[in-house]
Length: 628
Figure (cartoon, rainbow, N blue to C red):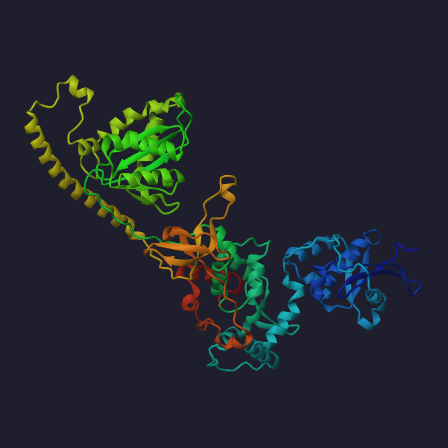
């Protein structure tokens, strides 16, 4: 029977497929077993590093014998050295952090015992269990990687294989740092911080000189990717930005060029690229397409849905002429192609004639066979904007905003099911208003005269009477003069608008085979705010124009898409670090002797001056005035 007045001993061990624990006590100077316990590892646990397995069986053994071990002090014995470091790693994350927290309720001491003396627990591992490898959910699993235990020895070994770090370790061991700065540009940075380098258990650290001394683990070249993945990609690090990632790395790890590597890592992170908004700045210059006469070029769009009116209307078909800026708007019950074609022909074309060109977006109601047949019969050139880019149809898009604003003003909190009654008087008021881009009213440019208002009749401002022949002569003269004036005014306005727009353009040219991201079009059935900002990657398969490309999904051979460069940004592919034998070519910092200066001199790719200033401040937190 166990004696709860005396301390317990918990022997733990792990093999490739099982973990085990033995609970015992020393009674009358003789160690006696109280209980044995073991279990098989799951398929995921079988892939753990040795140290993680040892940690797992420690947590499992303590939890299994918890009624015996609480609240008294007990001893844990293991044949694994690294468990002696348990209390020294307070900054663990992920699964390790949860395990360490679970052990906080116990009062214990970890002792190392060689394998030949550890046969009581080790013997259980030799029993092959028929269910080995099956799922066991007694301990929650996590994909996060904790370097404190599992990789410490591996990093220490990797330091010895790095030709420069190995040389530094030899200098420290033999106390033989050169008197003068080495000419080798890769060893020179190490020489400059030689007073901050220390060896702890044959592992190289850099020592902080501010506040409480902190030993920062020096990471060799081949382990940088794993550290970056842990402190940026891990679920407990949430893909934070460059500075926040650096803030977490500085007190834990050190290597030269850390900021540059973090920037490249985050810029090439697929999750960050697809999920975060970015001002990539790539934008095509404004394209000017002047219109020379009325009805040369019109544009169409559908506004809605709006509240259903008493007449059953829910949408507005908007038609605008580019030369006169004269708009037409028709309330319609639906967006079907048949309804659109019927209104376009009977209400617009039969009144104003057939236009030369008709611009629309890529809606099916504008691109159906019925509209195409109508345009074919009337010899109307049908053009379409690129998908999800309303700037190409700017005339009606801008009037849509104006029309909604005017409707809102007229309704003014009243009945919303009568908005179609207000469309005719709103159009009359708009057509009579002078446009800044033409200096004429749309009505005047379309009909060759100003409209007669109610005020004109009241104050006897009616047009003077003239013979028909004289009126026709004057009308022709006015129309020719007006067209010339309008062309010049529109050209000046367009050039002024283009100059303002093009100030911030940044053209990006893609080549066939290049990969890129495309702005995501949120799906209505999903929450817009939680959807990806960018989708892809896509691959360029053809160049239609300087700003239009045909693209296809990289992972499938689906239907080709046409995109404008304003809706795309380059896909940054993550490059694997060079192999160890290529380590001589890796970039490193070139620094001044910081014993006499606080200046940071970095490679050109280390970022802008603002980024360097942030780096300097962050370094000062840990290294003091003698910093990199």
